[in-house]
Length: 76
Image 1 (cartoon, rainbow, N blue to C red):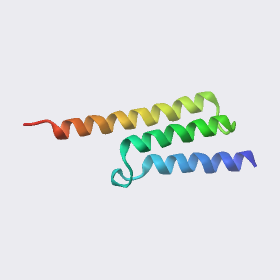
Image 2 (image 1 turned 30 degrees about the vertical axis):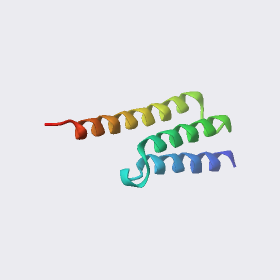
Image 3 (image 1 turned 90 degrees about the vertical axis):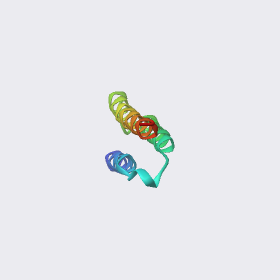
């Protein structure tokens, strides 16, 4: 049963991660990704190492959106 819960939780995390930019605010998505990773670790569905990997992916994604936003707003 835990394995089925794990697969569902990771699939939900990946769907949120891959969601198109215009569906959800970047900061909100980042917070939701971290919260979902926290929940999975707390429920022992993932290890600490897996949590770090998900948190790193979320952080890298969020940083890339911030870079894109700052470049788009820069005057020519």
